[in-house]
Picture (cartoon, one colour):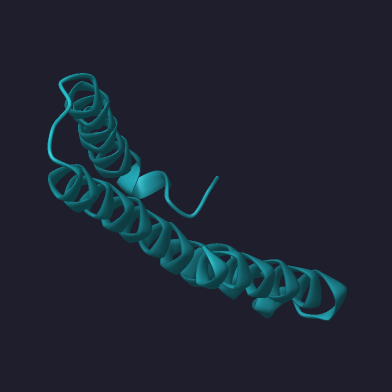
Length: 93
């Protein structure tokens, strides 16, 4: 069971809202809206995606990594490496 299972509905609701933001961006471009207004909305959508990412990462650390740490050994090392790589991807994005 994924670490985010308890908050799946919340995550889906947030992602649907982000999907609506992206559709709004498409409409703004299609309607030749002012560049700065479009960029402001892109920043808002990006921030919203980052918030979902941070929440999922937190849940992964609290559930999957913590559980693997209890097991110890190679399983723990693999989960920690996986989490570190995910953090690295988020930082670079």
